[in-house]
Amino acid sequence: MAVRPILRIGDPRLREVSRPVEAFDTPELNALIEDMFDTMAAADGAGLAAPQIGVPLRVMIFGVESNPRYPDAEPVPTTVLINPEYSVRDDSTVSGWEGCLSVPGMRGYVPRYRAVAYKGHDQFGEPVEREADGFHAVVFQHEYDHLDGVLYPDRIVECDKFGFEEELVAAAMQAEERAGA
Image (cartoon, helix red, strand yellow):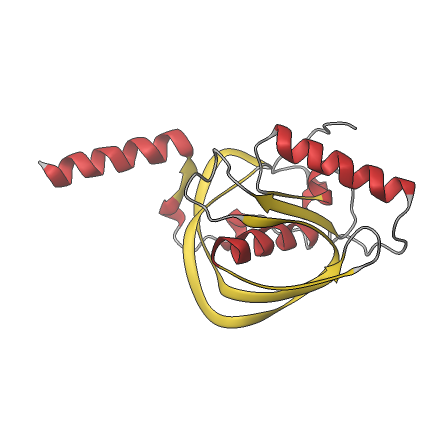
């Protein structure tokens, strides 16, 4: 249907807590989800939450077969998740580099729970329930945070591991050269 503009960090709408969806399988909800998939695909994203396009509803989508932004990531099933909830299956954390369509050109090293179980509904009101670990768990937690007005830089512990992608890559290459010299 349409590729919508993605809000960027600094827009106060990204910091709002989203409200629950009250009716499933409506023309408005179906159009929103179609627009979200179009927008995510156009931006090469792994996921997108409705607040990122200015819609304060508890709606998120995600899925990865292959993605140039995450070339080493394992596949994540294409998912529509409305009014999600989750529980932690493994409270140990794993840290990794994350990016966000609302924080373009930047990356940060973010700790996330290793494994979660999540549930919610699809756009038709059908229940969705899964367990996730690895990249799947990270993508879920990242998108879920958007529903509560949280962006990944809020979760960074080591502030020196946050910056523009180009500078981070250049610094890593320089460090490799120094180590190899």
